[in-house]
Length: 284
Image (cartoon, rainbow, N blue to C red; front, side):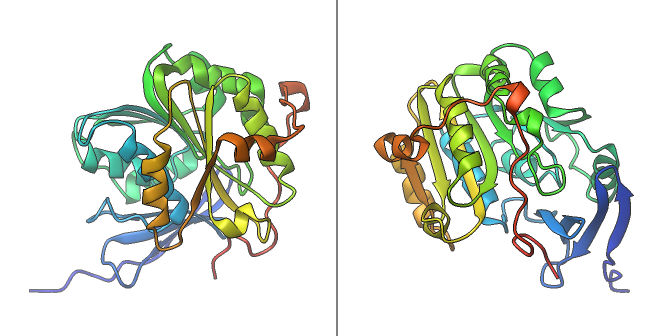
């Protein structure tokens, strides 16, 4: 029998730049998605629970702790990438209902054509702006909102305001959780403003990041969590401490110290997240 042909890279111009799908030589049906050289997603079509990026593992921990094991969830994903987390949740919590919003139509077409979703997986994908999707979604319709939206390597300004936070709160159920992938470095001007935004609406906040990022030693990802209900801090702390690159969960007094005198950011003053230092997230 003839062996399957070796997968080859795919390059396509999309709305926000040049996207590439790069095969992983060590995993037969695994792919790295980059846009303008910045890694966006990694997905293994044969093993959807394999999560290569640490920040994605942290978001998956949040999904794991959002309800009892295998209980289906209603999840709104803002930002699609290669649909790594939706595939993960479909595998770990069958019958979940997932709505994925991706503004880049070209990227969405590339991913759905080259990395097709399994049939009857409960994942619906729509080409739409994330803020518009929030403002038009039904009230109290999501158990979890996962936000991983980057225009290139920056979170767009219209997704960084307190008005955006209120739109997200309207869509979440009373015990629902908002989880966002953000990136910043000391003195954390952007991150502190985001925490101040969410503190105006949600009673419970947490931040998951590697100690080197929290100590201001380097630019990196931080997962922001917000809920009206108690967050599973202890369970999350155990999970992230056991990762290959261990992280900490900041909450309570330590998070209030980080926010300090930061004030909420309104639409009129909102700016995109900071430009990453050269090489921070690039691949060869």
